[in-house]
Amino acid sequence: MNYRIGEIWYAKYPLEENLSQYIERPVIIADINLPNLVVIKVTSHDPRKIDPYDVPIIRYKEAGLKYPSTARISKTVIINENQIDNKKGVLHSIDYKKVFDTLNLFLDN
Image 1: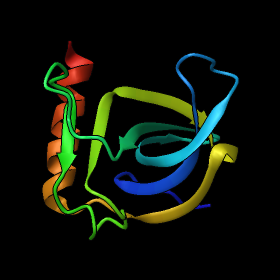
Image 2 (image 1 turned 180 degrees about the vertical axis):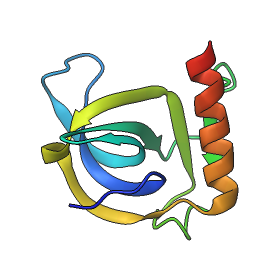
Image 3 (image 1 turned 90 degrees about the vertical axis):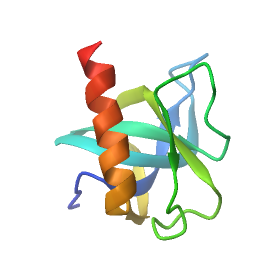
Image 4 (image 1 turned 180 degrees about the horizontal axis):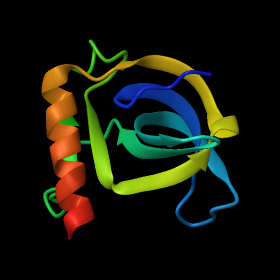
């Protein structure tokens, strides 16, 4: 498959409480080093006030998401490409900048 940074895909994302179990959810492709991908968790929950690394996806419909969504930068993980399911869309340039600026801040800390 061809992946691009900033695309949104459905993937089997590991559960925090049991990393050997997965939930199907949207993720943002943040880096590609096949067969592995660095992905950012996407949730339909509002950004948490206590987490400065939660970024609202303003143009969620244009990105192929059904609901207002949040990129949880602090929940960035590495997954194998066999965990990737189907492509939903691509982040709008406004959301792309905010997500990746915040990811860079997160990685610098």
